[in-house]
Structures are given as structure tokens and as C-alpha cells.
Length: 473
Ligand SMILES: Cc1cc2nc3c(=O)[nH]c(=O)nc-3n(C[C@H](O)[C@H](O)[C@H](O)COP(=O)(O)OP(=O)(O)OC[C@H]3O[C@@H](n4cnc5c(N)ncnc54)[C@H](O)[C@@H]3O)c2cc1C
Image (cartoon, rainbow, N blue to C red; front, side):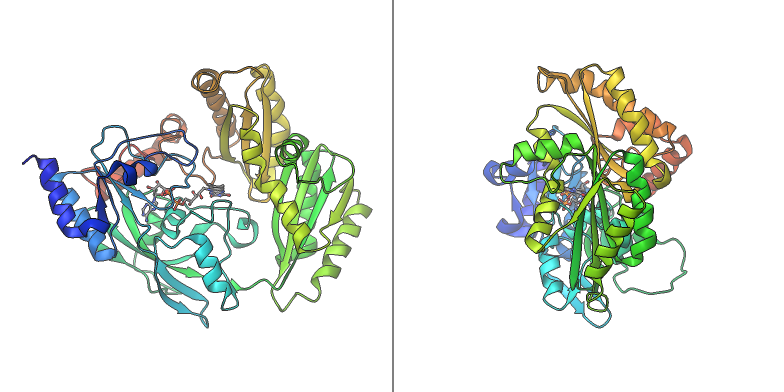
């Protein structure tokens, strides 16, 4: 019996027919990433039912030197959950592990398996008058383990922080098959390095996250969603600062999009309506929100904020969603930018950040710079201005051949954008992670000391390099 067959037989015995499959019909759908950019091959799809099964499987992988690619909802944007094409790795799906272990409504904490889907978490805690304050477009697929492993962001980071800020405790199976348990949250704990923080954002390269304890906040009682038309991106920055000063903690989200992005959504979605009569160079989508303690005052706050913004000349035109349905329509305009632009043809997407205070200047200077350097392209920056993070998409010239353009001009454009970001002291991965997509760019651009520390940590915790090889570092 070959070593591979021996491994598969042992894994089959350990996990049973529900926990291990080599059937191409079951395995194949999980071998391509969400964007369809990467497809790999795998020895098998392993779906353990609990932490002890994950630990036993990882020990087997160590014994037989089988690489492991952890996978949650496979909604990641950087190809981090897709195996390479050697066919030697096992894809380790956490999706069967989706239980809630403990829900402390008084302490506002919940402990759950890594495979719990974000939307299910939202619904579970909302039923008890609480809220998990992180959301994103992939919430119907993304799992808690995937969100932790990519330190995901989304549209509420401005007020509540990214995943790192929501995680109070982590349980993870390390490369040697031991289970690291820090699920019990402690407000103060100075016993050395904060190992859970090391696992957050490690993209499955240091350990398999099996469970987490998360912080919750009171449920929203009301929200006001505003749409403002602006003449330039620097005014958006001024409006953001004004909103932060005026609305304080009530400011939940502040997203921007240029005219081109709104226009492409209006073309893509025939039911979509522009919130304002005229089209403006830039648009800001602002959400003010309150729990029950501030709900009564919220409509007046939204109204007076807008009046003050008009008086100060910060907006060209603006409106407040008349009801919840219209609020959702405003958000749909934001959420559909990516699919609407994909429908326009090939594009290079960059998830970048620069210091918050400099983002408006970065966009104003870099958009024309890219368009001048690469004739016929259109550069679109949209998203989380308040976090200093935009999605910087560069659309191909008309007539570009999909597939060919990305491999040739597309790669040069990405290098150009990443060089600019680095020059502005920014990051080439704000919230989507490095995965396999940006690994070479990280190696090219990161500070050598930073890279060396990343590699030393990886070698110390996974000496055989079996956890998610070819990703991140
Ligand atoms: C429509 C849409 C909108 C999105 N919007 C945003 C956004 O606004 N902000 C944002 O940050 N992201 C966004 N994303 C990206 C995505 O949802 C997040 O990256 C999410 O965290 C991935 O979760 P997942 O469970 O699907 O992980 P996967 O895609 O399965 O995996 C992602 C990475 O984490 C690793 N991993 C997964 N589970 C584990 C585990 N249990 N232990 C160790 N490693 C693990 C994988 O190996 C891989 O490296 C969006 C995605 C979609 C489809």
C-alpha cells in the first residue's frame, strides 16, 4: 500500500464516510476560489465533526507529511483556501463544525465553532436582542474561522473595528496536533505574547481555528441612512471628519463611490434607482445607528447633521432614506459595485490601505496617474474611506481579451498600484489577506525585517510547512 493510500485509509477510519470524501462530485466544487481565479487539486475533502477529530487528523497529516488547506465558506478574495495543483493536499473544511457552545446574554459573549456561518451568528444573537458588529457581502457563506483567519473587515469597522477587535478567545489546533485553548475571555491577562492575536489574520498558516469566543453589542433599535453628492474626494474626507465630530458614536459607516461606480450599478441592476436627481463626481453613503438608548433622538440627529453639512458647504445635495426599504436600496447600490464592474469586463482589483488622513489625497493623485500610465484603463476607488481602505479597481481598455489582459498588462498595473501604495506608507492587503494572490507582491515589497519575523514564526510553529503551504509567506 502506498503512503498516500495508507493515509487515506487511516483518515477514512478516523472521520468516517461523512468526514472524508474523495468523490470528485463532492470535492471539486471546493477546489476553485470564489472569484474563479484559482483552481487546484486535492487528495480528499476532510470534514471533521469536532476539535478532537481535527486534532487527530492533523496528527495523521504530520505522520504522513500531507499538506493541509483549511477552508471555511470559501468566500475569501485572495485564493487562500484553494490548494495548489499538485493534488497532494487535503482540504480541511470546518463547515460541519457549526455549533454554538455558550451564549452569555448578560456578558454579551458567545462561544461557537469555527464553521458557524456569519449570517447564522447574526440571526442567533439578534433573537436575544444583541448584535455581532461585523458584516460583509459574503455573510451567507463566510464562517467565523475564515473571518478570524483573514482578520476580515467590512462596513462597520469605522465604529467597531475589524475581526481582531471582536475576538475575545480562540481555540486552535496547532501543526503538531495539540489544541491551544484560550476560549475563556479575560479582561486582563499578561502571561506573555497574546497568542490568539497571532492566529488572527494568519490565513491558516499557523493553526486551524476550531472555535472562538466573540464580543456582542446591544441590537440596533434604529438607523438613518444618508446619501450625499459631492464634487470631489477631498470633500468626502471633510464630510467624514464633520460626521465624526457631529454624530460621535452614532456614526456606524461611511462609504464612498465615484460617479462611474454608481453609474455601472444603475446599468447592471435595472431596478436600482439613483438616490439624487443629479449625478455627482463622488457619492458618500453614511449610516448613523443607535441602540434603544439613542433611538428616539436618531432621526433628529440625522436631520440636523445634514442641515449643518449643507450650511458648511460640505455637500452638493443629499437625502435621508425615507424608510428601511429605501435604506436597503441605498446599501444595495454600494454592495453591487463589484458585480456591476465585473460585468463590464476584465479588471485588476486591489484591496489597499494608506493612513486614514491621507486616503483622499492618495485617491485624487493615484487615479489619474494610473490612467495616464496605462492608456484606455479606468481606475475606480470605492469603499471604506473612514478606515483608510479603498478597493482600487482598474478596468481594462475596451476590447481587452479576458484572461490575456490580466496576465500581461494586468500584472504590470498591480505592480504599479502596489508601488504607489508602498510609497504612501500603505498596505497592499487591507482586509482580504495575502493568500496566494499577493504572496509574491508581499515578498517583493514588505520590509525585510517584517518578512523575516513572519518566516521565523511560521518555521517555529509549523516546521514541516504543512499548514496552508504557498499562502501568505
Ligand atoms: C460578496 C463578498 C463580499 C465580501 N466583502 C468583504 C468585506 O467587505 N471585507 C472583508 O474583509 N472581506 C470580504 N469578503 C471576503 C470574505 O468573505 C472574507 O475573507 C471571509 O473572512 C472569508 O471567510 P470564509 O469562511 O469564506 O474563509 P475561506 O475563504 O474559506 O478562507 C479564507 C482564508 O482563511 C483560512 N481559513 C478558513 N477557515 C479557517 C480556519 N477555521 N482555521 C484556519 N484557517 C482558516 C483559509 O485557509 C484561507 O486562507 C467578501 C466576500 C464576498 C464573497
